[in-house]
Amino acid sequence: MTAEEKVYKYLTDLKIEYSVLEHDAFFTCEASGSFYAENSAGADCKTLFLRNRKGKKYFMIVLLSHKKLDIIAFAKSIDEHPKMSFASPERLLKKVGLTAGSVTPFGLLHENSSDVRVFIDEEIFTSEYVHFHPLRNTATVKLSTDDFKKYLSSLSQEIIFTKF
Image 1: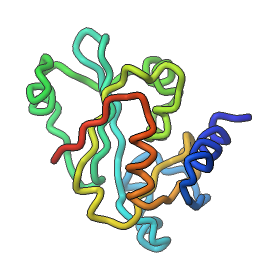
Image 2: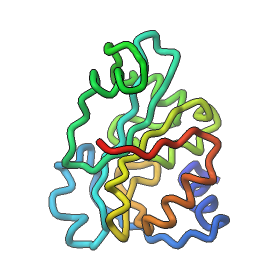
Image 3: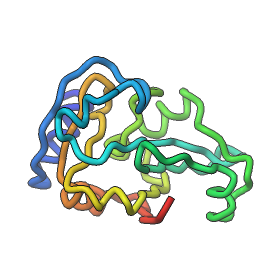
């Protein structure tokens, strides 16, 4: 079973309804253009994967795609050194089994992700639906925001809902 198939099985086991949209590769939020709006896919989000200055702590941040993250302010808000940065491709692969351009909350199912702290933008939940890549950037999984919360609550990671 592939890692992507494991995501679908995990969602099915949680009795989460979802649909899969196939498309060309989207490496950035801007690259998707109007695809998500045309397919009524719900809240358009971006997922960032950061590390602290020493590279010992990891953070996944999920926020609406039009928002900008002030990394220095974020680091200070969680009592980390302001020199927080994006994780290297090697660390991204090791911790959540992902490559740049396909970062997704579904990477939290990876065996090495249990110590990743997760921050979710509360504003996401004002939409009925949300969508994320299923570990590859040539497809999108659409699910209700209620089911996204259900998915998050099933994980072992610390999940923090906040405003960005």
